[in-house]
Length: 155
Ligand SMILES: [Zn+2]
Image 1 (cartoon, rainbow, N blue to C red):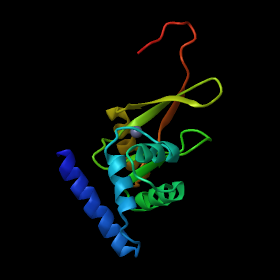
Image 2: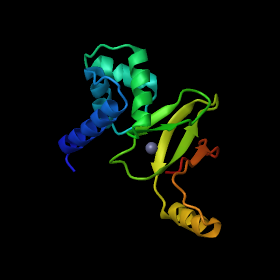
Image 3: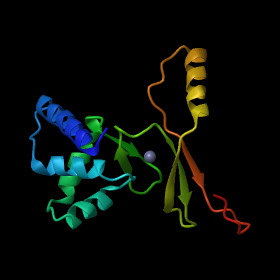
Image 4: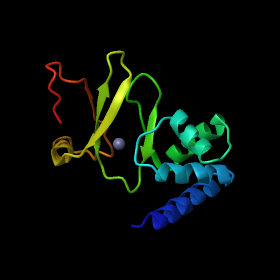
């Protein structure tokens, strides 16, 4: 689907959610939504705030934060607590199912986040569903990593 169509669809979905839940449809809220769907990365409140500011829009951090909460409720973004520091978010639609390797620095801060998709994880889910007779709706899987210490970086 073209980016323009995606934006149209997510705007409609967010508008419907805001109306149904009696929230105002402010231009700021839609700007935040479109900004998120225009980047292919994980972000925290601060980084999305900086991108919006760089694009010439003025809004408070509180507006950004509150809008992220609404987008979470609307199912338009996903929240990750990769570390005990800031929460990260990413778009949840038009974004293939994947899991994460979080590479940490010695001080525990995040160096980078690597996404991967492995069908074996889906096979585990199916096995568990059958074995437990349950329907699994979602999962979070984070691998925490540090660089190899023998000095030969593997890719
Ligand atoms: Zn991701």
